[in-house]
Image 1 (tube, helix red, strand yellow):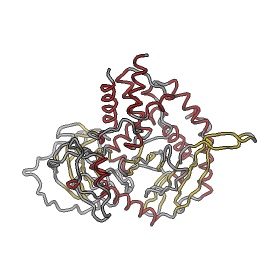
Image 2 (cartoon, chains in turn cyan, yellow):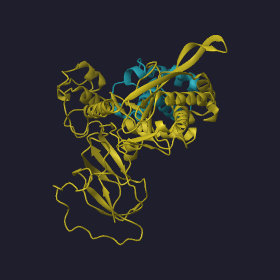
Image 3 (cartoon, one colour):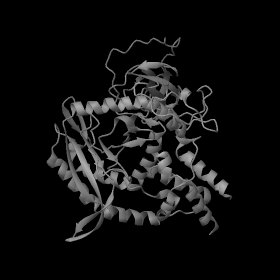
Image 4 (cartoon, each protein chain N blue to C red):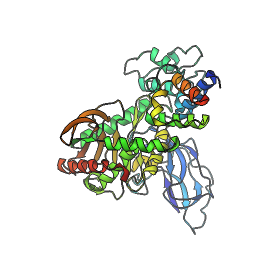
Length: 82
Length: 400
């Protein structure tokens, strides 16, 4: 997948976790929490969604690497090609 | 024949609008089935039916707003004959019922604030404005008129455009039908004002070492696939429920001066909504569920609370409430009790602090847990014993 496709995957998963954000512009470099008040419940659901769509098992210790959309894309790219 | 009436879902609810029937005449009904969707001034609520039987006749069509207590439908019990169909639809100006409005179950009705947002998709039915649901909620809560907001480059009004519009004077609250974090704020104000006015509160607090809890949780989650992981709110809720079983004066309702202790623990889970709302729907039987059951319940209920899709029993059945602030918040909270409950448990953020363990200073993760109690029913000593019990329970997370 291209980085653009991965970003679409990340934002699409975000909108399915928080449907009230549908249509919002997503800043790739701001944390999910700072932009959209994403809390631990939302974040867990986001991680579940990403894991399901990519087949990548995301351990809890890696959560700090997925705090912004761009960081999440980089993580998924790294783990996807490992 | 059982009359199914518009329930009261809060002390200040006086009417509701029937939005949609989920069952039709002839359908079988079991207790707890969701029968209809009702819009109240506090939001869209899925109404559960209390009786087993067959839906015989619908008396109120979708779109009608009726007072609490109005007969909405007839349910026939097993073995009863079908009732006559009405010749014409009931006239819109239905007279209010003679008897006082009450739920068939006679459970006490707390004035719980409820999400005031009907889920709407972008671009639907709001004229030519394209507004994200989050932005619409923020605008309603801040009194911003959407028609005066400059859309973004893509023609959409999102959170950034609302923020750029600035905050108007507080009295300029725009009222748009069906949205309304503004209405929710009023409902919260009413409930909390009543709490402050009527309940003589006392508070006790205890700093609990939760290192064992978080170490256990990290080990558990490391061996669980992502879809089965636990948030710390789940063992926390379980522990609070088990501790409440040892302190009955903190779990139940005060109804007309009499304290009615509850058999089970239906724990209200205080849930923050994006844009500033707050609701505390009840998770039923937390004392009997296992940890995975509690986590599944939280994962199901919190998104529904945020989407404005709660059920009537979740608004009325809480026997006590847990207000867990979460990470990166404050050290402690002094919460207010939701009447007619008699207690609320508050948890601050779990933070690293220097602590004394076996005579030595070392880093531990600690959390300040507070209990607010209704002084007509309990006192600080009892609440302190509850906190001590909770502490003991949290030191053995594997037993939760």
